[in-house]
Length: 224
Image 1 (tube, rainbow, N blue to C red):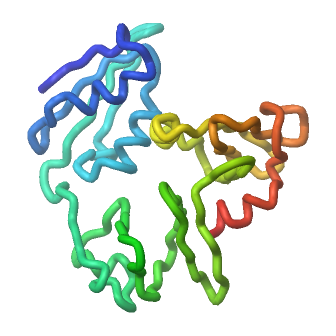
Image 2: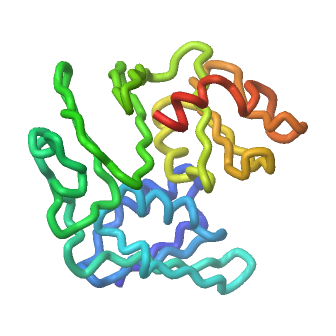
Image 3: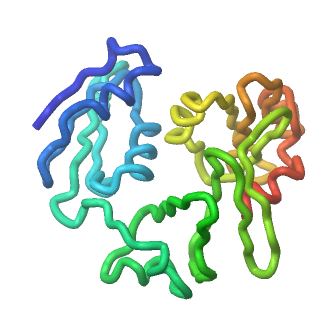
């Protein structure tokens, strides 16, 4: 079992240092000592690391600035699975992975490639264009998904703050802000190019200055 105390590491470097630690063996854990509850790290690992056993993760507060987190690696069946895009032809994503339900399905397409029409019942789908743009057809409606630029602002509604996304957005030159609002009973997150001026406002004086949470951009951002 490995242990890493990150309290003396600059906050913006902590996640990278944690990822640099050698992976524990299946069924073992990496112990992290932090000065706060590492929920952002939990969300990041849960979303991006298939081997992370999020159900067995445990955090114990041992003092005002000492939180000890056990980050376990699943004993079996935790390796990433890969299927060909052609295998999704006309089938729900889950059927491409017989006997399992992946936490994340992440297609990777080259220019000119596409994903055939398929179903994803009882799933919320969020599209991000890291570079360039692409078209999405949903329930007979066509949508264009593009990278943010200029004065564009992405508005997202979620049941929690998407902390695991923030380090990735920082690395790619995007600014972000998140506020909770009783009006939508959700966490409203705004993302915009870091060289622009924007923010998120709940309409009741909360949050920072910028576009209102009912910005039309939310239509394509939250329900694509």
